[in-house]
Image (cartoon, rainbow, N blue to C red; front, side):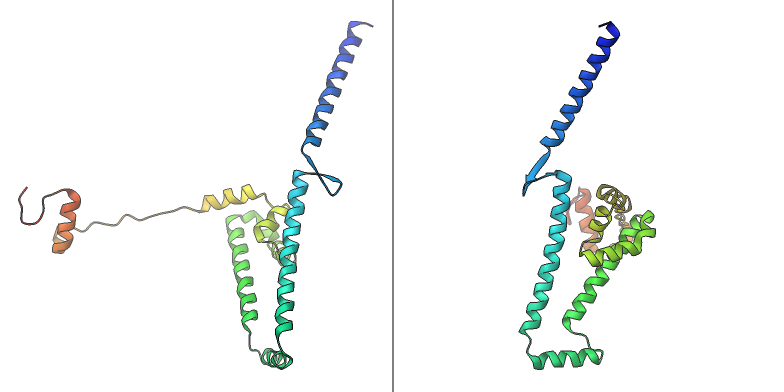
Length: 192
């Protein structure tokens, strides 16, 4: 075997060692759940989908429970009120949450103008998946959460205006005494 062949063989061995160490790293960051090997990202994705499903199911259960507690007479009264364009508390709460969610999406779009083209999709996905708009943006790949927070931080400029101090001639006696104390100038009735 000549020196070129040895060099080639050594580089192939090094390459295979690197590949095997990468495979070990990948498998070391995998978790076994229900006889499946999942990566951290897959676990997080599954957790978020389960969380959304849990929220949706509990809301459905709550709605079903409320409906089952209502008597037939009350249900007919509610149907009559809805038919005559009256709103129930549940209707108002649902409308309020929709308005808040739409306002949040509008705020996110204002902070991230590049998301304007996806506004409709974000709204629809947020409605259908019961996820917060931020989670929809991140989960469906519109933008990553760290970029969302950076964009929001750019717009959060805090400004506290300086209060203009009054001239001495415009101050009341009490204001003048407070000003003197704050400046460390004697007290009333004494000379300094």
